[in-house]
Length: 348
Image 1 (cartoon, rainbow, N blue to C red):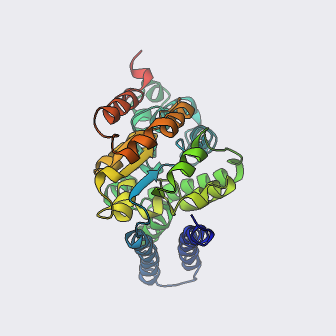
Image 2: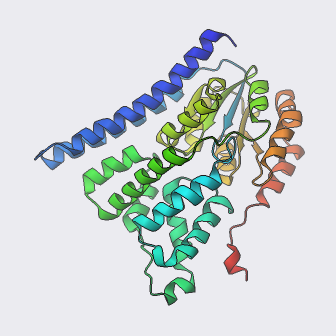
Image 3: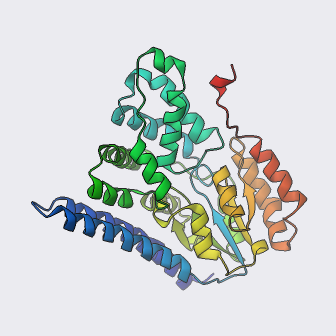
């Protein structure tokens, strides 16, 4: 792969991150305008978020194959060992703070960790994950015994059901449009999480064999980061560990769902048996299946060995056309057995 191409890919990924930053800045500017008619501000906010989303989606649609094969790669918990520190040190403390869950923080922590780390919901977008965590918390008798009312977050549920670009820029526009207190609370929490992640999640490198796999694949496949983490954090982490030059685009939650990432970047451009998704969560599997792509799981708790198997066996099978069938079924069966949908406190 030539130096000019690598420079171009890095520029493309960085430009997309800049666009996302500019859209947030644009929205923030309007939030400070004095005595501006509400309808005008709301329209400008919605238009800014809409333009950003359309631009990012169009970039994926315009992406042209440079190889016969396509590989999508999740980031948190798949490439980088960041899931534990982000959830336990960043997400959970900010939920306790912003949703006033101090008196039941023990049970909240168990719910959030189950949803985001140890269940079939692992790896989903932060906003539906928050809702699932609150639902599990509300079911616990210990919480009721302490007289704590878990927030229902009804307007956040409605937004999650109606919106596919579940990121801060779009949520900011919705808050400006509605002035909804629950959405405002969710936005403040999400922004605080980003600040804490930027402050403390550093030096957490990739799992063993990741870089070797990417280098092995890059000369035969177009590589794309497919994630529900904000683009700014993704770019920072991939650049910190000097992996960003190995992928063509770094896609985060601002681009839409993982299924949409693959659909826009690869749909109709590669044959299904030439498309592979690598991920550590059921949502990655569903994104692959939704695009008729193949799937290689990075098993939670066994990440290093999973990447070693991909390096020594999986990629060769993918490029040789022997990945589908019994081999993939066996991989997926083992993967799905690791992630339950019933929390451990319900099994006592």
